[in-house]
Length: 342
Image (cartoon, rainbow, N blue to C red; front, side):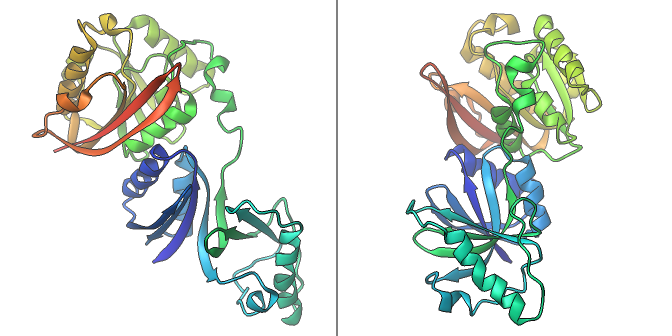
């Protein structure tokens, strides 16, 4: 078992996503400690598993594997460490959770590593841009010496932001939020994901990035046409099929065929899905989902804070797996519910 340290952004959905990703890939995990945005997890995962998990994530900032817990950063302490895990070229990075200024600390912490390799008659080298090993010190209540496995790259959603697409709708999800709900649905690559309220395609577009098979469905033909235009813009069609269907009729096409559901039901468009109220819309959605999902499949979805969805969930059909929330805009908080079909 290894110990991994994750920095996440935005609890509680980030923590829910982290747990979901471990479950998705059948990796054992035990949370050892949570402090602010730093999560320490013990797992049977290999470093390559963690990298794969992080690449899919929406809210993980970085991930490292624990090498050693240190009592201090004095030269005497650092000189006793076995630095053989370091491959050349290397870099030293510091995450200071205590937010104390330590001028030149990375250079100072690199010196014992440099001296170790000189003493062992090896040629050390540093490359801050493309190191083979990033030695990562995390300084908080405790000091962790880690090897960084992965770091989030800024701008990865830039090309898929809503305003960049040919079809636009003000209620569409941003890519990061769409990715979150997909991950909470615990769907693996090549499994079948259904978005029954696909709108202009935010969730299917993001799922397509992972090679997930998607059914993008919507009752509104105009919305579905927009989704197709957006997919064409990104040259993404191979993993996605489009379906024009009311949510209550989905079992006519997909009965017991879907591995997972991830969706964002409409808040102000209930009339366009043949529902007389938003409460009836969610009742129809939950009933239909229980007919199209495979046993043990997950449904992850957003709903507005003013809708008491919990009261609509049939406990004989569904097990509640996770609850969370995320701020949307204009005072609206999107609640998140993750259910598992019994």
